[in-house]
Image 1 (cartoon, rainbow, N blue to C red):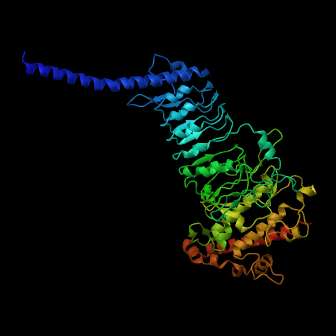
Image 2 (tube, rainbow, N blue to C red; image 1 turned 180 degrees about the vertical axis):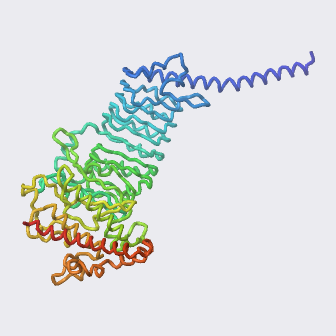
Image 3 (spheres, one colour; image 1 turned 120 degrees about the horizontal axis):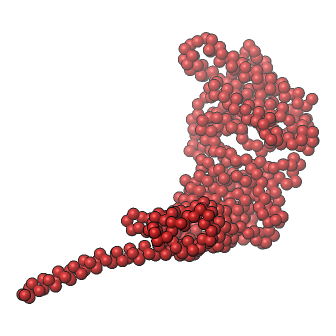
Length: 544
């Protein structure tokens, strides 16, 4: 055999060896990686002491672990990417070996009875995108090294027995979209002592009953919306350890947040203004059952809907058993189309500048009158406790996207718990707004649903005439009510809002110039005016 041939054979053998070696190395690594996941899952199983739904019946060597119930693997590397065992009634604790599932993206173990601590090893899972451990029995503090899960988008650990505070490090999770964290499950004695001077909203008020606070209303809400309204007095002061609010400051880095729920954390202090720029995507902001007072940063109010913001009155106090005693509050949804005041008097300002609004047609005004009447009927006759609004006026009639009218701002509302109890029905001074409040209230008459009827009548007359009851034309004993009485029934068109008359041509076109239908429109105006007048007359008997 020639030397050249021998060298060629040796070269081919060496080349073949390296080819086999190159292929064997990733296979070996893949095998080791798979076995790591396999052992991590078995360690997780050993920490579960009760499995009522037999979820682990498939977790044996008869099946590849990627086929085990609740386990999902990637197609390429066959590594665990999802562990989803939610709502299985599992009892036990979390194995620290869960931190070896290095390819996992979702851990969903919510709605079980898993106790113990959240393992620090979870912080190794840099590919993790969702960690859902809510509604379990987890104890201890929230691990600060969860911040190493740099791809985390969803973190939900509410409804556990966690204690301590929310780690500042979590604010470094810049990709975070949903954060729901309740810590401080055990209220410390120090908190009780610091909060001893805080009393409940409305405590000691002559009227009794809960304070119903004003919520976020329209796009014209002024900067620095009060969290409690004008009638919610409090003695809370800024916490001596103000740095506990620094967590809110640090959240400025989480610009992708859509849901932020930090309820029941005993945060104490005022919300920093930086929250106003927190996120353009924020839809839910929950901070109820904390000790937060002062003003809601104005930027938060620019979000379309924040359902949890005033789910329960933000300001609360500690009960005798150390639990948070929350005060119920009314929540207003965002009303993008302003108020009736804006539309009647053509003045609608938003953060985007002046918005051109059209005249309200007769049909629209009629529908608004019906919406408001239905709301009053519900308050007066269908609530468990009858409610008198006490401040019905155009600026408190708000419009949603479909121009449906909503009665808002119950800051002066009265619960008629006992109509015969003077403490529940008497009025101290004038309740409501001048021009819309029955004159009898100023003479000491009792608060009554008839007062709302009077205000409703004035509201109807303002919608027809376009004139406020405080218009400068009303002087020398003349008021909006008398103004309408003098015009009815034959001179009704003389007092109709000129902007409403501008729609006559449109009405004629829509009704094919039918005199009958045009007259029906005139009669509708006449009927509304007469209704407004009769509301005023009926309500004037309220003191008798």
